[in-house]
View: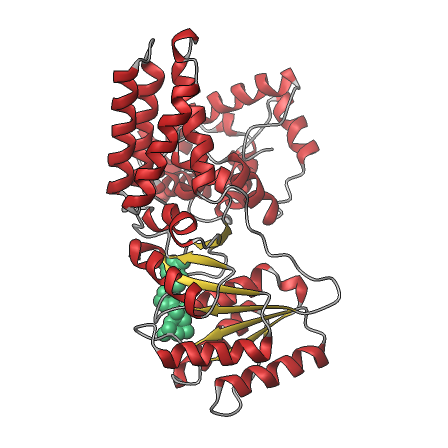
Length: 432
Ligand SMILES: Nc1nc2c(ncn2[C@@H]2O[C@H](COP(=O)(O)OP(=O)(O)OP(=O)(O)O)[C@@H](O)[C@H]2O)c(=O)[nH]1
Ligand SMILES: [Mg+2]
């Protein structure tokens, strides 16, 4: 997400932290770099102008000349102001305890409404969601929702009738009767915001009385997404927005502008075509990510969300004794893989970029371990020359690859042993 923006900010950050003294001219140069970076990321120019002015005011109040580390003060200020720009506090869905929470998803054609409806249903499956197809224009739309609902294992209200408003009305009745705690209404998209669409949405909202009217917009469409938010908010009313396709080459402009320029807070971002590809939007975490400070909180939550059950006690004892083996290693690797592509996960760790992780190399490692016998995995020290040759042939790798893997494994094992002995704090990811 936002690779270009993150790269530019990490250069700025290094430059700022490298200054021993920051006077007016250095500050001007820093602000200029930030301005250009934001404009290149397609952030609304008015938002950029205001942001730079605010930063300037705040920086002038810092006692830069007296500080031994003026760069830190600037970075902290940029971080704080970025959080404000991104909407300050995370907007989370609040569920009513003894009533149905109703979400209406609306937006233009092809932005990801139907997919997002299913993603939200999966995320809050415990609330017994009901997916409602209020898209009667396109026959395939209902089938799409139905098949997504099936994959997600959640109920989909059948499309009865030709009027979206009637479908929505019947669906609400059903939701009450069947004890659903969450209703997600997927509406039809159009190429433009026209009067028909507005009337249809207003009509649906009258019968479902939504708690959240959320605009779904394509994160890659930059300022268009912001303009859609402005129009829909004015014509239909909005509680918030969801930006999809942030896994693509979205430059960041929409996410950084929408809250300030449209007055519409961001609730979620879509990060993939698959059903788990949705994340709550946390301004502080996003600011950390943009500034290259890593995103440990998101990472920890992701790991928790997937409930990887690693027997920590057992693992810790093994590490302390230094008898970690390739079976444990493979298990860990598989557990981490469940979270998604390794590169994406690694990019949440401070100082690691998505491009730093060579998936090919990791697949090779997996192939080599798979070619070992169980005995070899449990006792890597028995792997001698002829075993190495066999493993290399079996995994389509070379002797050098095997030697490198064994050497790295030994180093990692010793390092973990030392860290484990210290006994303080948590084990490093993914063993925590
Ligand atoms: N990469 C990626 N693709 C997404 C994401 N969200 C949706 N898509 C894809 O975008 C395309 C359109 O998604 P839909 O959910 O059908 O969009 P829609 O807004 O319901 O479309 P209409 O009902 O035709 O207006 C599909 O191919 C989805 O797989 C996302 O977060 N990332
Ligand atoms: Mg749709």
